[in-house]
Figure 1 (tube, rainbow, N blue to C red):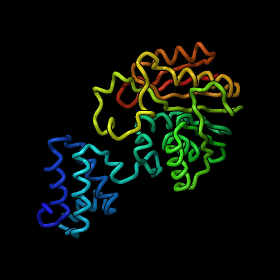
Figure 2 (tube, helix red, strand yellow):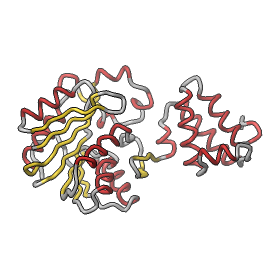
Figure 3 (cartoon, one colour):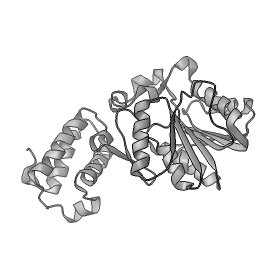
Figure 4 (cartoon, one colour):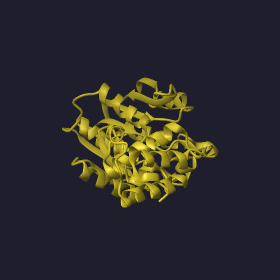
Length: 284
């Protein structure tokens, strides 16, 4: 088994020793917390207080297999089959993006700036993280979400059922001009925005295990999703309705100009926790 004396502290050391050549200390600590919590329901505090507690052979085997997967750069969320977003526990797999902290920031901005919403749309929903978080924050609102991927929509539906939230998920290619919605208060979207040229700088756990359909856009047409969604927004937002985007850090000015060109006011670019341009919003 290669884990000395079968204790919690020995298992932690096993992970550190086997992953240190691939990941930094912070990442390994995060993996350790997630694996103990998700595989054995043992918290960080419990590990500290019970470091000498012995684990069973079957429990140890879970960590051996997980360690092997991590060395193959498989995301830890795919190993556990779940990720957390705001206060939601979500299923994730190869068909959807793993929710990022930046997208939590986007949702927090929308929640902070709005109240008494009646109709919300999330374009390019993926796992459903945005729409489900919005439904949690605005339970009286009608929340709808679209995606072009059948497999992503299946994951989103299961996440809605798991969290007992009512969101209407619809298959729609957001790049097509027509839309079935009207009189909408809020449009929120985290569409594909990573440039094809960015691939060479991305980690293999993202490149090899997350859907390229939800990630990449061609360098020569980097704003194609923003253009289409903004055009839809002018047709389906009510007067005074708002549009919110998560964006590529280098495209803030261009997306903001796109909104202004299409009649939006009070357009602003906001930075994420890393001080990078990450969000654009405006009022129609």
